[in-house]
Amino acid sequence: MSLLDQVRDSTRGLKADALLPALRRGHDDDIEEITDVAALSDRSAVAAVRLVDGRDIFVPMVLAARDGSARPRGTQPDRAWRRAEPADAISMSALGAPPPLRVDHVNPLPMLDPQRERGLDVDMTNDVRIVDDAVVAKWQLLRQPDAIVGQRVVAHLSAAGFTDMPEPFATVTWDDDVVLTATRFLPEAVDGWDWMLDEVLRMLAHGGASPSWPAEIGSLTARMHAAAARPTPVIDRPVARAPLLDLAQHYQALLDTALDPELQTAVQRWRARFTEAIDVLAGTQDAEVVPLHRDLHPGQFLRWRGGIAICDFDGNPAFRAEEQDMRGPTAYDVAGMLRGFDHVAIAAANRAGASDALDHARAWARDARRQALDAYLAEPGLPPLDTTILGALESLSPLHEAVYAATYLPRWRYVPLAVLNWGW
Image 1: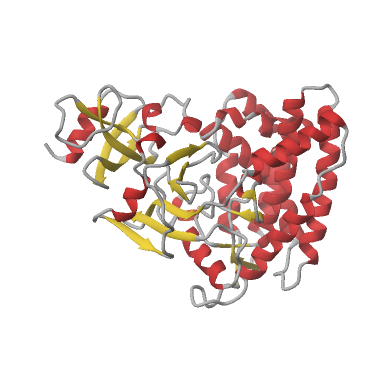
Image 2: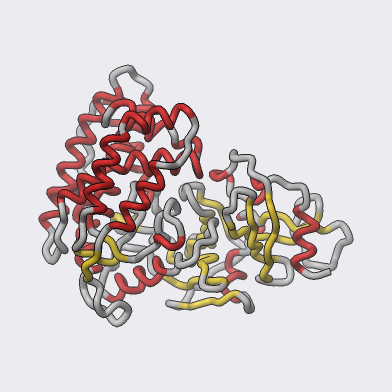
């Protein structure tokens, strides 16, 4: 029996939740087909899976006894393939995988114990594991053609001297689709959805001083954009000019997406505003564009022993493969950064529970946005920021968040609902 047949036999009758990371479960989708399987080692593999909604995903797999313990292939008659969890410690085996997988090593790996692997439940899109407190192994969930562009942006930024990001070690691809990335683990790193949220929540609960880090976030984002605009051997002409029609069409498609009644009603209240913002993008024929992060939000800012770093250049999962482009207007990242303060405020107020918490959080977000934008604009060597495009992209942010919540993360829906219902 082939490896593909073995995995198909083991997963027959399962719902998609059995193959998804914990944070992505709850959609109750069916598995249409295991389309292919690539071996990592004698007991591990990665499966390409098609869901009935048409999405293709990558799933790390392990050969295990039916009681759950992993064991080498062929040693027990009751073995079966299942989703590999962090305790199975297979991530580093991907870095020595044979064809059809391709492994591109960027920098040497540190000495580590590959059996020491743990999960990190902070990435809302992918499956992140930490290996021996030395390497971050990120398993890509959605199979996205051209997702490799994010790794090219990382290489370009590194060559341009931008060091406020985790050092890249290797990328594993399958037919040019990213399966896994390995980067340096930053000691004592805390995801922005934790440290930002905790500090704003403490401010709301105890009436303390406002956090000082919004300005630092603005400066860090500006330094990234300044580095992105510098020519390197990776991208020798990073600055270009382009129309924004494709971006406008992306948001029009989001506006035409059918949502559940509650979200649909909230979106319709903003329809005129969304349409006006889409028209601004569609009418922009000659915007300056540079390599971008493309999915900048609080979770991408890690605070660690050495300061704050930007992570996760994989791109925005809400964009279709043909829409993925490494370049865009700097306003795209800046809008994500500024709206991120709104989202932190909403999440903190939701946890605080007090009747006046949302008003106080909203006031903090307005001040945080001002501090961050002032600091951003003060950095030297910055590409131009088009404020008209920025305003349009900020207006369209809750549309993106509503569709994202409905499609990928139902527990996030209260955030776009708060923006849409409160006119944030």
